[in-house]
Image (cartoon, rainbow, N blue to C red; front, side):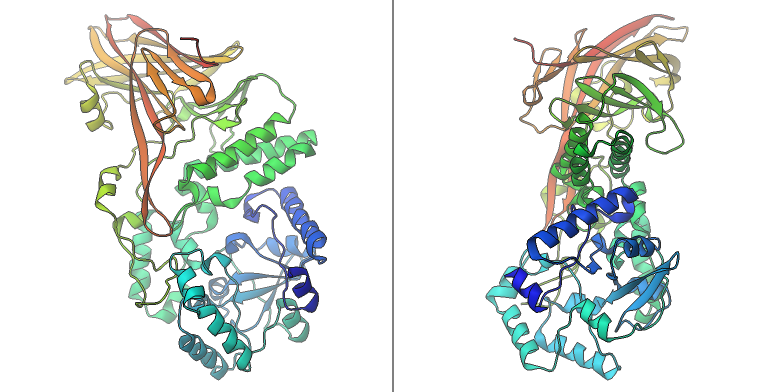
Length: 588
């Protein structure tokens, strides 16, 4: 059917990245390959190569003009906000932009029309068409997600059961409204002029990317201005999600690293895994879903690990600035594990991959405040479907207890100091009030043979007295294991008693692990994390409160495990502690 509609000119298919990447977020070589995959697919399935391209999330940067021209495209669609930011007022046609002297047609998607279809009555839509005609406009442009025609809350009933779509199609058929494809319109109509658009996405996206406090300020300012003046106001840009969510940046850096290795080794057999990992959904969060959904993040990680397994492999440590923050990190590769260590973040392990299972074991999202925690949206008129941006959401009472926000990132191998007599209940209440200053702080790092050594010395505040301890951490690979060790030295002149706690945040649910004595067993991964000396193991779920399409939802992001040793150290005495991550479960 689609092939017939394409052949008759009733449907025009758009190209794009095959696995829906944001093109500006991936290397140019991968952009080219993803577009070729889509072009080849459309040619094979429908007998056509596309003239236009749909940009994922309409994320635009000026250099895309020359890239898309070279890729064989004549046009793309962008939101009208892009054009207003460039000072272009007329949105009833298309413009030409260029980069390096290579031109591209750009169509402005009418925001008003995007909110009218399919959420408002036919009378409102007809009135808007009349308004466009009265202003001399000859074309109304819409391009949007198909999910609003049945998948968004209330739209299936409104669009199909209550007959909105049938009525709308009858209206188009009985009125002098000509339906045109974009390429047909370009062939018969000259451009409105040239336009040079700044980096942007749709208006809501550029609000979502802002930190909550800034987003609140932005919305207060926007609502205080007359509608015409709001055209000059803009929020952030898509790249800022890497700042708002370090987990997103970490994922993207891993993807860039894998892409570079594939290119270096010309390992095309690993490319498909990489392309799947470039799907944009897991890298950002707006009104719902995205980064907050563990299955999306873990699918991306799994594809990246699968790609790495097809690359040449060399065991050992590598030192480099992998996350592009100006400070070196260390990566360990063994046949069983990949370990990523960040000395500047408390000597933390920020990622452990089980290579046998192609699973990121430490994928746990940090709990942070979102703008929508502070408000509930207003709904539309009764009886109508609502845009996803208009659905009324009120934070349910049961979610209030999970509105806990972390003061540091949910990494692992974190060093925490508390009073020697701390119990589980007190610890849970005073979680962010420890007596040491090691979490998130800089550790000195060096390689010694096959081990990474991390060191930090700092003061403690135990019952009002000042003391100092030095923590030396060691990570040493084994055949199918990794040893994590501590040498904890009392650097003061008096005896010290305190609880030393090692925090590990693992990508598990409540029924996926077993705690037995001083060992944490994970049957599903065939792994165990075992202490050499007797340790108490406390476990706490890490739950976030985020919006879904319909309501708020509480999502288990992982389990936080805390290995506790109660230590008593004389002056200059050192205690040795060990944890071993083993591949394979013990018989008992």
